Image (cartoon, rainbow, N blue to C red; front, side, top):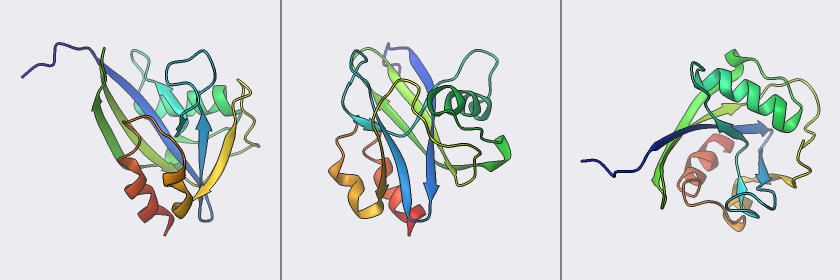
Length: 136
């Protein structure tokens, strides 16, 4: 059964250090501005999800990630008003460089118990339980 909506493939990373995970706030002017999400972005044509995530993390946060350090964690599948989002999420505990947001968006390192305090896009909310287990 078709939703009649285009499927948009995006990819996200749960960047983890110790018992904390990085969240980024969507900047003003973008859809769902102000909500907190796991960093990542759209998968371009002829790009694997891992390649897209390596590219996006470098563009958005100024860090260098190796594809071998990305480990499948969960995925989100959510229907929004105009499209259906499919988002694989990878755990990553190794990268080079300091997290420096390119769009001056706020970032936060959250513990498992703090995750539910952050307002997130609907597709991200079910991922909280996966993150809690990964951070335990």
